[in-house]
Length: 490
Image 1 (cartoon, helix red, strand yellow):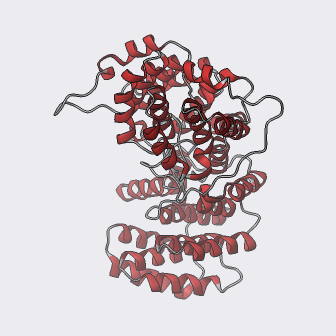
Image 2 (cartoon, rainbow, N blue to C red; image 1 turned 120 degrees about the vertical axis):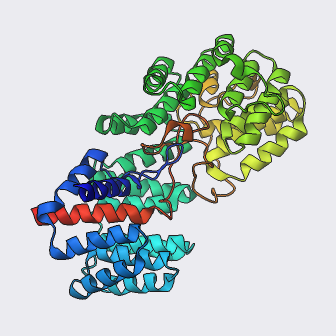
Image 3 (spheres, rainbow, N blue to C red; image 1 turned 45 degrees about the horizontal axis):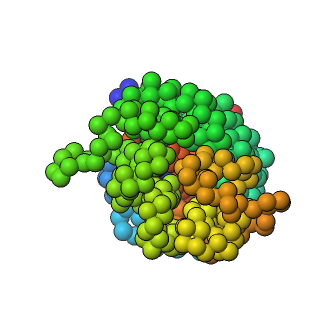
């Protein structure tokens, strides 16, 4: 019984490892904890002798008893060369024992067989990713799609690898995955993330609502959907979700800051400051620190009250602690603009512009306002038109208050340079985002669930990323064993 519990726990961890951290998360492969638990229980009567040995080797591997694990795995693979879990385990063993070339070789030999399972090819891609060999990893993802194009997971994993570097390609793969498996949670989450990165909140909402129908307990999907509601100005829907999350965890900073931001965007900054309480005060030297979420909310409240000078130190604090949050740095740009500090504002905009398509609308629209205040009206009009062209859900100037989080003064100034008539063509980003988001490196987007709320920060939404290099193999382990058990059961 004790051993059974350990195995069940291991499988749960393996399946959950695929979940892309909300505020970062490894996309989820469509299994929840209940599924994983039943998978752990089923093998008692359905596993083959080889499966049983491999399961034992997995426990030895987890305990870092490498010689014993290697002996068992080698024996199994002699009898069954394409044993999925055996190949994954032994490749991981080689990596953990500093023998990466052997990991590559054992998988390459298996892949030579036309009958090689998809998960083994995906494991080879993961190994090359861990070796920072992105092109080789991409080639294996392409091979997995070529051989196993009827499986949704191969498209999901390839899209995860590409991430935001090529949103068109990633979106196409996630869309194909949903054609094959309409309930694939990774595809739903991460396609929604791409829509959010493109400022297409309406389509993101549809996907996240589908996701929540499948997994109502997903806190990440809830956060993502709430942030989408805020961007669309649907404050009651957003607040309902944030209140639900606060009821589950009153100490969660992200949902609390979401409620505060909702009041600011509603035009009630005084109520927001009241909700912040002592967190609206600048920290004193050697005193307790406050979350950048609350520093940002305080600065925004002052900015929406029309006091850019009071807002600046709070927004500066938030940006220093979490500089890549586009909402944070853009709010600081606006506070600097209103104080005539154009050089400082342009320095931040220049930094944001290097980050590619995910920040382009913010750079263009907030930059247009800086140029307007600096008396460069022609450039301001051009930049504003290019920024507006990116916003699919924009219909009227006031929408900039929710989509771009512009304060009332900024919206009033923007009206002088907003384009009229049809939207111009969308501008292209100067450079692609150099890397996918991580737990501490994200701006906006969606991701899967099961990460603690305290790990989520930023705009109130979460971002997907490629599988974490040190956890991807665990996912494959659990899923492969689950798949093997199910095949033998049938």
